[in-house]
Length: 319
View 1: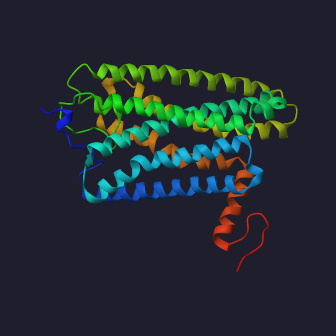
View 2: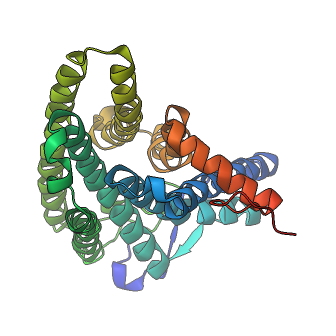
View 3: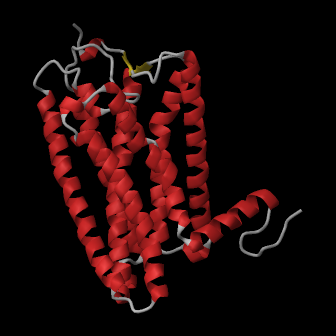
């Protein structure tokens, strides 16, 4: 028996004990991580440099890419290091920091996805009021609210989780520090405080989910009333990527946290955690750039500037 005051480190779940497969996991995660860094970095650079993309929709997309970069940089580098060095250990403070950052980025991203649904609703259902409702100051305030909500939620969860006495060892059945797996180590009913906080958070996130669904019902009704096929295509091209990102994010996270305990197992939890913490940040840029011609053109200009040193705006080549 031990308690949280005597724990100096936690042991994370290893993907495999076979050395060859550990190296395979390292190279696979490295490829995904570098792809996510490159793709999100290109989107951030393209939106920041191209004045045509200085609109509310792309401003929120830039914030989403920043959150994706932070999210995938929280758990993946440590998992790669553990696979490379055949280790499972993470320090107590490192685990607390990792849990804080995971909750912060995921919560802020969900709030931002809700705001982006509102942005698309106003743009399509109330286009005459778009400039008024989503001015530059309003956009900054909404983005700050998303980041602030994630910060507050992460602080509450981190303090609450690590104030609970732990006496069932220090081995976590996950490849990063996650709240449910830390609570399994609790030796008192103090964990019910954290469970209560999770339930409150679930109700808040459920409210956001209902808002997103209602917004898209109104959006699709408005789009189907557009007389021209070109107009409908343009409207769908800005809405479908966001809807795909929301669906991917929510489906994987909901299955992870709402699945019955009877079907829970370390391999299944591991796969689900990868699906909601690693896959969305890596594929979000692809989803958004597939149907968005403006964004694709801006990214091509950034790539041209990086390779040929071509000025993004003037088109000149510097020697």
